[in-house]
Image (cartoon, rainbow, N blue to C red; front, side):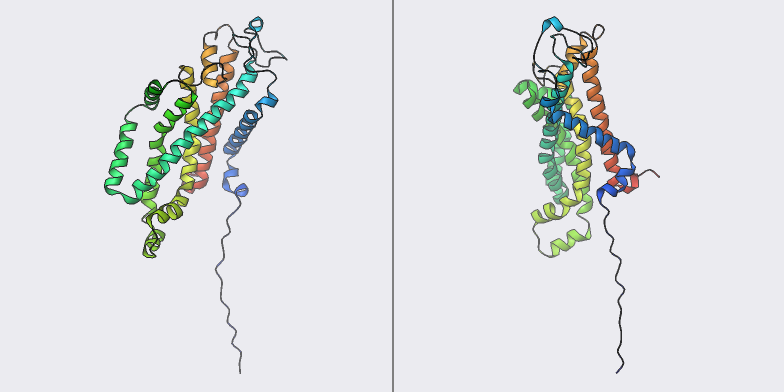
Length: 293
């Protein structure tokens, strides 16, 4: 009896490359931006150990000193060490921006998923609310909210968090409109899965890449807007170190001693550029159509 040998050609399994070997690391600007962000976060976290002086200690005898070995960036009008205040200001600025984006994501992502998935009247109602919020300039609306509830970092963060909700919600809605027409959603419906499970267990994971990119870019905008509100006296209140408030303090002495304004201004500029470049690199990584040939 002849033995029949059968062999089945198994399809090649495509293994996903680890992130550290992905195309993202070929984008040297994005990698450099990521390194800069990590350095800024490191300096902010360990500011109490790195800062050579108390950021709030005043000594009018040392007012407006130039850079030296003891005071790397000089001193401000009240004799406080600018370098120490920049380090502590990074903590305030970054933490505030993270909370702004966190508030907008917690509110905006579920609203975007619900609007895109259900459509109809629910979609119209949610999008009309977003249209009303977007009809006002972002900072102007934030100013109104802060004027009603009072000055301070907490109120500024809440105000900007509300203002940023439509940005991420509209993005999630647009992705959901595409994903809900996919075959896997129809299969989930045919299996009797609930709407909640389909939205949060199946559609949401496919929106994560777009959400991550949007959050990274929103962090840069949040840093700028928080600095603007502190510059106008509506955000962080003295004597707390903050880049926007330092920029306002140094503006009056820009021609005499520009150290305060330049140090805080460069800190804002470098951080915002780093987040923008990093977000652009992530977008090119997640969306192959946008990769440069």
